[in-house]
Length: 387
Ligand code: TGC
Ligand code: FAD
Image (cartoon, rainbow, N blue to C red; front, side, top):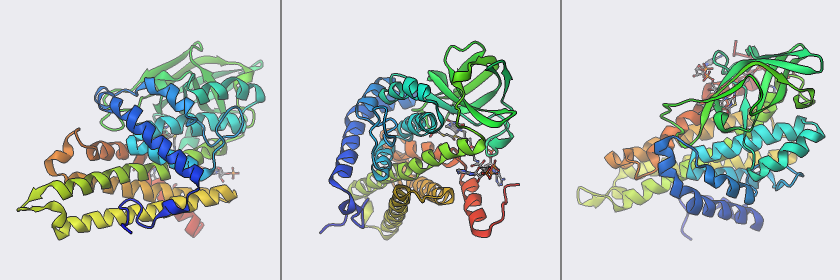
């Protein structure tokens, strides 16, 4: 039997028929529906909004959640969806991650029944877009220090402050915003059009261009009592949302890495240099073998993560290990593929340079690579080394 470059240990054989079906369906959607928009979206620095209804129709938004019309898929299927989306582009996976893990999840986990009824069906169908505001200009890795605050005024809350580097910020219908209150850090649903709420796009990104990123500003925004997420009691709730999104990234980054490996492999078999295919040189084979090995270990890590999640025993530090490891290996794979493609590697006719540029953001967002190593370090030593 021929061994598959991107599935050297035949993990596919361990998938259920339904899991295979989900992965194939998403791969087909990405190839047929998303890819035709990608080059223009990347050049123009926009997200192709026209595909959002189809993401909803296919049940890919909040696919891990149960009820309210959500797909209620198992944890591995959810991971495979993220992987197939990011095989297309990290910006596509980002859109689905934010909508499902950072907006729908907190409403599902910490929201009132009325909030769930109002927002989850709209968000699932892609009829409403959400964003998640945690990071501030002066508080990135240390969100607990945030300055955005909400003060009680009768039964309402008055919100002041700002958030930046927020995916989907300028196109969101609803923002999940984390703010300091006299009861600790709590989550609020801030709706588009609220007086004093401004949503602004960030331009000039050289990474994740097929994704919309921006800032949120709150000036004396009056937030009605029914828009606080009632079950939020501290920064812990925001970090619980990050667990969901980081889990998806641990899978997603592997999609980008596999796309790069296949591109480098095909190119090296066809490119003739010194009268022979590049693939016939030892140095090139070494690079391909390392990429395939890293991808295989990353997939094993992700698959085990999904089992722990399904068992309900998954720990944040385990997610950190996988996010850190898999994004780093994907970034290295993208750079190696770019190297193997020579000058052609920097052209947008190929995929590896775009993946490499995207993965620089993925390396930083949802906790930087070093923050995740510090989380693992804390787990190993029992000593907190952030401060
Ligand atoms: P710390 O004092 O360590 O903990 C406070 C409380 O929270 C608990 N906890 C967690 N709970 C659930 N999940 C986690 N991952 C948790 N981590 C900590 C902890 O046990 C404690 O509970 P309790 O009961 O004792 O109160 O908190 P800290 O403020 O010192 O933070 C620690 C640190 C640095 C690890 C955390 O702040 C962190 O992860 N920083 C990184 C920030 C980050 O990842 N930001 C992401 C923003 S969102 C984003 O980037 C979206 S990208 C979107 C896209 O895909 O496009
Ligand atoms: P900093 O925290 O300033 O870190 C800079 C460097 O210092 C890093 O190398 C870091 O590892 C290192 N460092 C920091 N603290 C320590 C320490 N204690 N010890 C050692 N080294 C340290 N945020 C949201 O809330 N919602 C979003 O939707 C969102 N989307 C994003 C989309 C994109 C494209 C990007 C790029 C970012 C997004 N972010 C979002 C923000 C992202 O989460 C932050 O960029 C990230 O948490 C890092 O914060 P920072 O950029 O302020 O870097």
